Amino acid sequence: MRLNNAHLPILGFAAFSGTGKTTLLVKLLALLGARGYRVGVVKHAHHSFETDKPGKDSYELRKAGAMQTLVGSRRRWALVAETDDEREPRLDDLLRHLDQDALDFILVEGFKAERFPKIELHRPGLGHPLLHPDDDSIVAIATDAPLTTKTTLPVLNLNRPDEIAAFVVDFLIGSDKTKRRASHSQWRP
Image 1: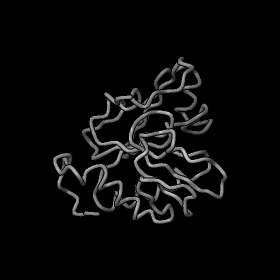
Image 2 (image 1 turned 45 degrees about the horizontal axis):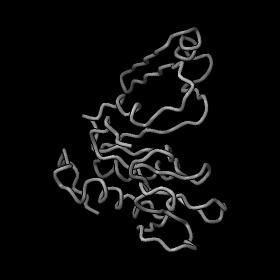
Image 3 (image 1 turned 180 degrees about the vertical axis):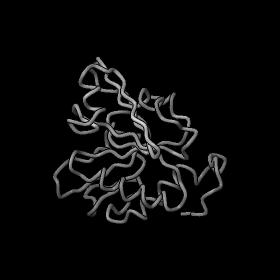
């Protein structure tokens, strides 16, 4: 699959539920942000989800029938759009909603069935099979224990977010310096 709406370097994190994708992304965002990178995130949710709590004005407006609710303040804004579509969203469709001019690259949580560059998170102790043998868009594996099968992919330490952050930067912008849109970051892996 080609991501026509990705105008920036993009890298995903794919794993079975409960492996720690969000936990790792939180750590990576702190590390990358501290080094001056402007990172966008797209996260897949498997179920209906609420962005705020019952009783809040935006929640009540949406529940009353607003198809789009935009909430803005001095510090942030958020857009919630309802859809009648019962199918799972495609990553490429969601990317067009990001203001990519304000970002250096995009990290994606989930969308493991779609074809775009991804790091597989694997915890052998959870008993799930590896994804990479059936997905050639996986570019590295981050694990918390030695793998029992051989791979030619880079193997990263899941417990070393700094190591994974270095890989992310090198993969997304390190090999092609022309991809760097801003020189505001001094950090090099």
